Length: 511
Image (cartoon, rainbow, N blue to C red; front, side, top):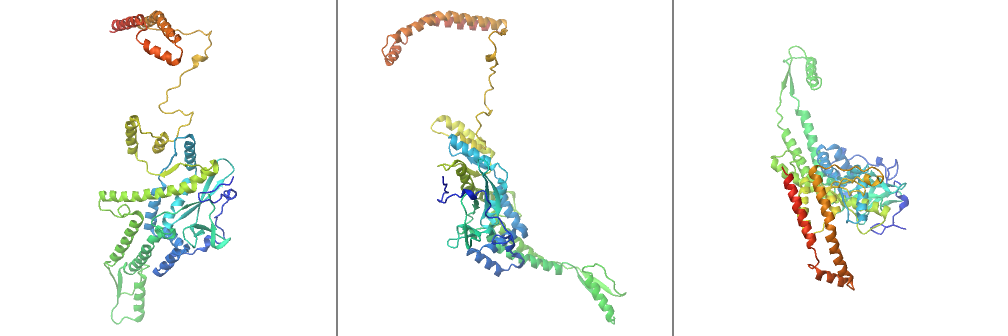
């Protein structure tokens, strides 16, 4: 049977277990094809590579994005903070319904995400935050059931977007050097964070921070040059009038070498004076570098006070809530990607397509939610009219559905059935009673024996009423009519006497 993806493309099962986007020493997917950018980054060169990326040639922009993470400490820090905020979130899987099949699918997906390599795969997907998109290749293990994938992050420069719309990602390949080849279904996880509307190549945080990075580089370089010139005290050599040319040259060499050797030899009578300078000129460099860092924090984290210097705890708390909003938005988008490119293919390949699939979430568990939810369910469900699926409650709490043979909280302890297997001819142990217990047992046995006669009379009257009826409905009607007429006085007297004697025995034996 031929399997199709959501877009009607046939699934090529024969290539699912083979790597397709691996690098090579030569060809269009060689890592040696990309040169460094930041060594000679100028505003003109930056404008050129950004314009080329907007037109579909993003190799230089992607190289710049990678180098920015390596060379700018602040950019690497804030971008890493945004990535790790999502990567650390627990993965929550909710069954589509309480049906046995949907619950089974949810359990299978939970088992899939517990396998080694899941965290690395998620981090690989989050690489798209900086670069605009990221690709993780899945290599399916078809040697056993169910088929499960292993994950390999692929360099985004191995891919290109179609030239017509710049929205369909294709694999660079010698089969079509100009346009690349389409990505086979169920083979790649493609994450394209929607930080703003537009084509993915203009969507990454690296593109947003590129101009700040460029100007900050110029600022830091100028600052270093300033410190190199003015960071050391000014050295002035003095000599007496009429000094020989050779002695003057010796003094000049000594003054120059004091900058590196911290030692010199000069003729007697000469003087070297150190003039300490006040470095007020570094303030503009520091201020503009800090200003660029704050702008980068705003662009990536949405605020500054959890990454830069904050003015108060309350303000920092408000700013942290802004950062959490970004984290939740990134997590929702990543969950959609994983559901589309991993969960649905995993279920379709192993159990076939279905109408409903498990839901996937990456979210921070909050302890207070459990208390509120438990109180709400305890009050609302008994009122009726509100039906809550047990699987949804378990998923919200983070618990898996219990196996059929599992010992669960709240279960009654197992009944000891050893007596059922005891031989009938084995000596039976007679329970030992206290005198009070024995008197109650005697009273109970006497009451049972005395009630046999009155009960038999009542049963006989009911049998006569039923026997005289022709149909079941007539028997019910005659029993309704006979209610209150059946003679039960003897049984009622017996019950009254038994209750009186039990109460009397209890009073007598109560100290």
